[in-house]
Image 1 (tube, rainbow, N blue to C red):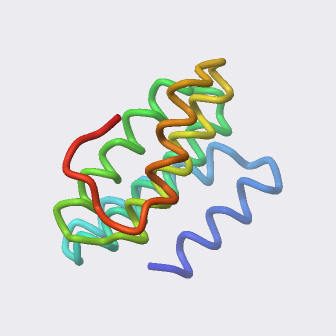
Image 2 (image 1 turned 45 degrees about the horizontal axis):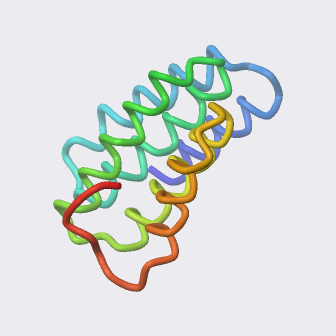
Length: 116
């Protein structure tokens, strides 16, 4: 799974957004058979590519799905990574108070049951 995501990210860096999105959607589909942490990672990787394609709302929704998977699986690292990316998305959208709330969550030492 990691190799697939890295290959897709390399495609994204080269400007092959369509190829990266296709690869990451496939990786997300295959991750359904794996742990919640792997599913979270697949969602987060896909959300990065979606954001790079200029579809911020879709990236937001995909990241929130990743956050939900991380929380269900008790994956603190996954939760932090998703919260950090949500902060970046909020910053790009000009939503500084929301970005700060997500940034605070990403720095928290424990899981939080509610979203900001």
